Length: 314
Length: 289
Image (cartoon, rainbow over all chains, first blue to last red; front, side, top):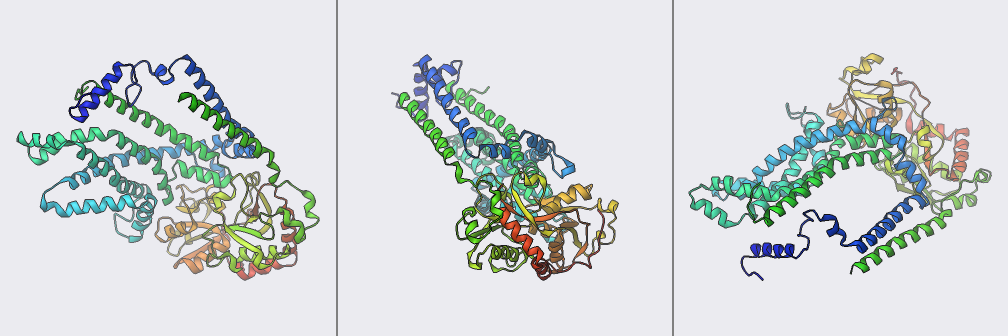
């Protein structure tokens, strides 16, 4: 049992486990993924049987429940789903598919702004210069407030509050702009905290080493701390962005942004069916699942990197 | 350990299937359509059809808008829909104290599954698509759509069918007024769609939209009492639209409520309540979509 630094010790443990044929932690890396997961023929048979029974049970719930027909008619009506996806102007219905493009636009614009704003806030909070105390205070208050207030209230506050002020330039923006502003305000507070956790995870000795090489405080932050911090927090950042993708739907409360969820709501309340929501949910999954898989791959790659001896940059 | 997990999985799924089986066998709990019920609509005869025996459970959304309700308090008997609900209850033999109000959001009112009310009264328009999911009573109000704008808006003077297409509209989600905008006015600019009518009113006041469409009583109330400097531009010709009480699909109670509504129409009660709460609208100009 290695007794050196705990981190390194953990790595050695992992390596010895690998040698013993056990799956590495944090993922089933390598070619034997399937066999590791199932572990032998008998186990494979059992897992197949249990999967069949489980899925069969769930399907039975949907087929034999007393209200199954009504649920299918309301939630999974193929004709209604097609109508919802394409929209139908003659009935005043909007296309859920077209609405999703707005979600994607809002998400992409907001994401870039959030990454930038949050980093500024996180760095502000880290600065130890006494002159900058008010900014530090401001950063703390900002994250406390906007993490604490529900996003939908922020959206309402900006979208209905700003136009009521009648200020030239601010009060005449579109709901699209107000919505993105609210998303950026709210999510920057969360993401700033993620960045901060990343910055704190960089060991103090790194800063000491950088300073002893003659780098200024700012330069050691810029060239030594931040690159390591950001790399560490990429998975949680992506997690927040999966959440952001869904929350773009809340912007529709302002009225003028008829994104996928709002188009589905209009459809639903006009025709008294919920199939449009099923379409919207499926479309959102098409957005979020690829990002989730991408996050998994990044994590796996990071684990692989560390197992390969740490620090190797590919 | 693995064996235990497998066993637990089987047990859980087994329980699930059993639960489905027993749920299916207790299916008669759902109300079966009874046509014969129409013949006897006495207080005692309607009891088995009620959500809760001895109580008429009536639903509406919150906020409940004037002049359909007053002070967001359906139980005060004031406002057209509140008064209609109590009049129907009296016809069925219920006292005022036996009417219980419950909040049912519009979006939830048409969800599949058992309803938590006997009927919902919430300015819900009958359409054939909707009637395939829920049941409606006969009409308790014939609806016309009307246009509300701020007094200084160009729409007040210029509203030919071609000009009507050039404005920015807004409305509450799910309303037939919104469908009216999209299908009859067909504006070039996509209308704004709000969660509540109050949000739409707020947008009108802040010039985020130029006009909103609502049923005539609501439109008159907004322009006369709610938004200063707003005006009822005019009402559109009738499209045959009407409000109906909303029931669970094939609810046997519909027959008796229809009978009550026909009595109330016949003896002039509904007309009287309309005059009392909704006013008389002969002075409102008609505009063509």
